[in-house]
Image (tube, rainbow, N blue to C red; front, side, top):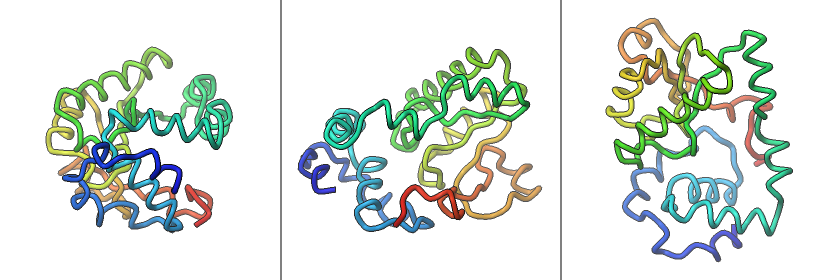
Length: 192
């Protein structure tokens, strides 16, 4: 975290967003303090125009892109295999930004481009599903939900740790509850 702080200047932070996200983020995760601070800084507080540059510097210093992608992300080949085996795949955006921080136009681009990628890769999606990056009601807006519905997305998933009820499906299909993977024994993002 010290290295990250050395790369970040105050003008790179969205200070007006700090209070809005501070109490609402990572409340269900058992992270150590440094992991918690790092995740909040990079996922919520840094202006997106600076985020990739700073992350690139940290990766150069502590890891490499090849290992990160090989160990943490699915390949296109794996996605195709899952689809061929009748698994349901949905979108999670392109750049993994917090939608409530984006303009309406940026939100629409993220939604459309993410589904364009999946449909080009997999040929046809039987049902369009979406899962909000980071999740939580503070990470998307009414406009986001409306746009997803207008784009033909059947359901979207929000991080709200509870089971989905029939009422959720009827009343708010673009904000269905789901559990944070960090709540499960082998789903933690850190060993905190």
